[in-house]
Length: 252
Image 1 (cartoon, rainbow, N blue to C red):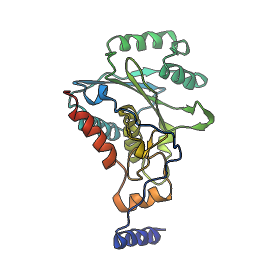
Image 2 (cartoon, rainbow, N blue to C red; image 1 turned 135 degrees about the vertical axis):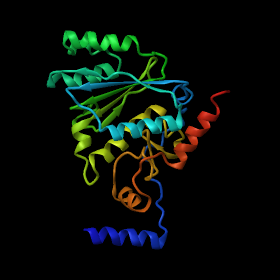
Image 3 (cartoon, rainbow, N blue to C red; image 1 turned 30 degrees about the vertical axis):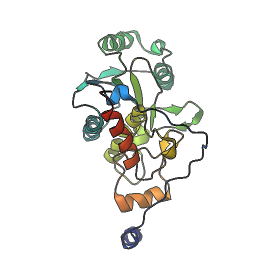
């Protein structure tokens, strides 16, 4: 296997191979704006919520925060982690309800409910905050049989919610847990940046460029792209250009 991978890498270098973007299946995709509430923010607040002791590797979390600073502001405020204990059968129910702004507090014990409400009272509700939930369980709401690694909930009038399923991220094939966390942490925040924005490389809210951290899931060409260009730890040139353009327009 090792010789096969080395052979592929040599072949790619000899041919200077590049890969065409993934074909866009949803032909009705339209352009959308980058989330300037985050990109132009003077301060971004991060509220970590740990469910049943789940947390990311510190190295991966620090990496994702550096990416946030790179495309937004150096002024990132990390709030104290809120530790919640939730019965297994209520974990996903709480996440789906809370993330979609339907409350979900009824799935919490009284002490945890008070704890979370208290933390949220000091959390800015001006669309520049990111609530990062670490969970032992995360189901796909439109396909309950599917386990997700991460999920970014849609537009909110107050703050952004992203969720990370630790057991599923830790069990990513081939790469280490820390490598997987670096990608998934940044990928979900990228969804809240709302890139890809232009329909030319946006297929179902994911980037069609295989070297991009916003690429949806590994396929054989993505694997070859890793061998050629390295791990997809950052946005592709097209997504970077969208973020830069949004940043440059912040004073307009």
